[in-house]
Length: 78
Image (cartoon, rainbow, N blue to C red; front, side, top):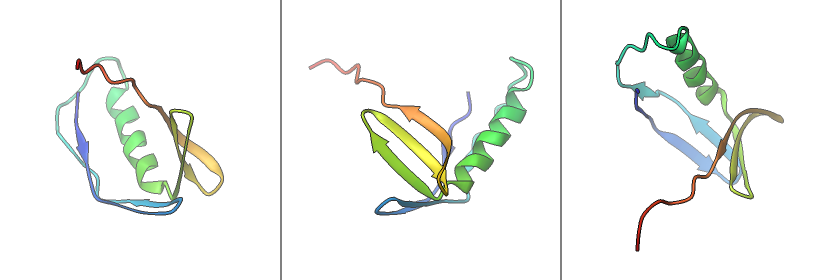
């Protein structure tokens, strides 16, 4: 599994993500995993808006949803 990091700027619902860095672990399984990762990183860099509702983060380009993430409940114990 690769890890990603990069700067972003957020103002109200506007968003700019750029210069994403990734670790360089080659993934050969499942087939096409590296192509999928490349598409994912390109989509992140095209995001220009965000919305957060009901535990979902929706990254958008204009009005179009491009990536949607579900908030995962914390597994930390008190």
